[in-house]
Every structure is written in C-alpha cells, then in structure tokens.
Length: 150
Length: 150
DNA sequence: GAAATTATGTTGTATTTGCAACAAAGTATA
DNA sequence: TATACTTTGTTGCAAATACAACATAATTTC
Image (cartoon, rainbow over all chains, first blue to last red; front, top):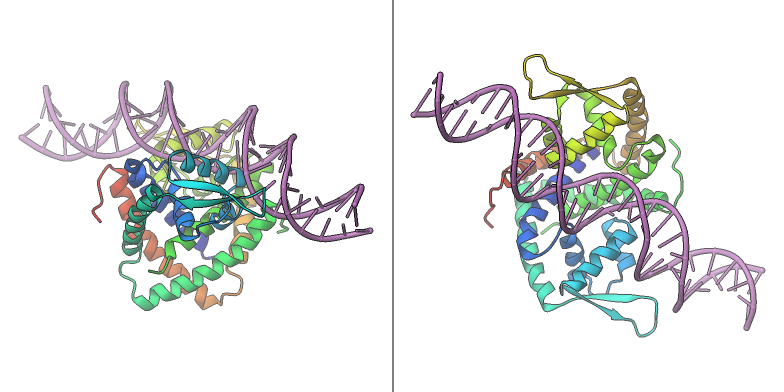
C-alpha cells in the first residue's frame, strides 16, 4: 500500500510549523493565519462554515476567531435576518496581515513545488482535490459521531 | 497560483481528526498513533530522529513518547555505546495497537484514494514525495532558527 | 402552530503543542 | 588534550486544541 497519506501528513506539519514560526513576528499566534486567509477570501463567512472549510473542531475555530477579533484582525458583525449567526470580516489590519501571509504561502508553494513542471503541478492539484473531497465526507461523518466500519 | 498546499492542509487535518477520534477507544490519545507506527516500523529509532521524520517539535515528540512508554505501548532502552540516546521499541501491546492503526490507516487510504486509478495513485505518490522532500529542507532550515527571504 | 430536530455559538476542563532555557554526552577543532 | 560546537534529552510555561455539555435561534415535522 502506497503511503500517500503519510506523505501528506509530513508535508502539512512541516509547512504549518514553518508558517507559525514565520508569522509570530506579526502577532499572529499558532494556527490563526489559516482562519484569517479564509475570512479575507470569503468575507461574511460564519464560524461554523469556516471550521468545516478548514477541517477543525467548531470550538477550536470559535476560540481562534475570538482571538483574531480581540487582536483587531477581524470584525464580527450581526446578521440582519438571522440573530444566531455572526458574519466575519477582515479589518484593515487583518487585510494587511493577509498580504504577508499570501507572500509567505506563495513562497512556500514555490519551494514545495520546485522541480515540478507546470503540468505536474496541475495534475497534482487535481488529484489532491479529489482526495480532499473523498476525505471530507468521512471527516464529517465521523465528526458527527458516526462509526466507520473497516 | 494553484493552492496545492491548502488542499494538503485540509486533507491532513481531516484525516488526523478522524484517526484521533477512532483511536480514542484504544487509550491512544491525540497524536500518539503517528509515533507508534513509526516506532513499530523502525524499531530502535531515537526520539530526535522520530521528531524529524514526523516533522514535529523535539519537545512535543519527547512528551508523546514519554506517554507512550508510560502507557506500556513502547519501551525505551539504553544504548550500549552511547549514554545519551535511548532507543525505542514497541511492546507487545504496542505492536497489537499497531495492527489496528494499520487497518484504520489503510481504510482511510482507500477512502481517500477512491475513484483514482492505480496509475493515478502512483503518480500522486511520486509527486507528493518530491513535494515532501522540497518542504522538509525548508522546515529544517527554519526550525534551526534561520530566516527565509521572500 | 406546537413539538422535535438541527444549526450555531459558548464555556469548562483536560490534554497536547511548542518555544525557551537548560543539562549532559558526544564530536570536532585548535 | 583542552575548548568549542553539536546532538540528544528534559522541564517550565503559555497557548492551542478538542471533547462534553450547555444555550438559544432557526427549521422541520407532525
């Protein structure tokens, strides 16, 4: 059995570790950059959806978002029609930080993909999207308390 | 820019989350399965190398390993020639747990790769290995306190 | 439209994670 | 061989993570 998922785990941990170290000087503590990026790219998103998107526990997302707001990177606005939800938007400060993050992430992408041809990158991306879609189904299933049989 | 790394992050978090939930009933707390697998497959490895392999902080590995030993999944043996290092070996209990973990991981692999042809899996694996090698260089560089310029 | 269910959000608590700082063994250098 | 440097391991501390349990709004079902 090809250990595809093991490779993915190694890559993900290495990159996350690098990013966390590199963003420390911008007051962005561990993990926060991931949320901020998504909020900048999907302004108005609510935290429940954000957690699903990122694939992280609801409560973890809640606290990360609270801290992002506390530190002035984002704003939580009440929705007009739905009293339950709070929509998330970047502040100017958050949007500025997003620019660094993009630069760093783009660089990491470049390093990670160096030596691959454009078409290899394309193939990899498409394959990964399929893997991700397969995986997120099971994640949601298990997260809701269901049991997988194997 | 293709967000290859973002896909990788999502997949890794989802899978890790699933595994952690599924291994809870075997007294394997969060993260531990990764170490145990590697120790079973590389008996005699030392914790410093294990941390490098997994791409996790040295001190995190140290504590995860300590707990694995405390719970009887592994054993730490002194080396004859080198007083500094401790070699790690699975116990019977650890090796048994490894069997579950394999079954679970294989299942996750199968789910994740469902719909991909054998040759697509092969291509994906080879590409990911290259990405991983690229990435681990930078990880080691940054982990040692060096600064990347971008 | 009342009751049951689902969606969204929060807080309490235990555990994991990782940086900083240290210690000691081993290795390289002069 | 003495000194500096590197490797390996540990502990203190602060922060992130996630499960459980709860609260309340929204939606579905009867």
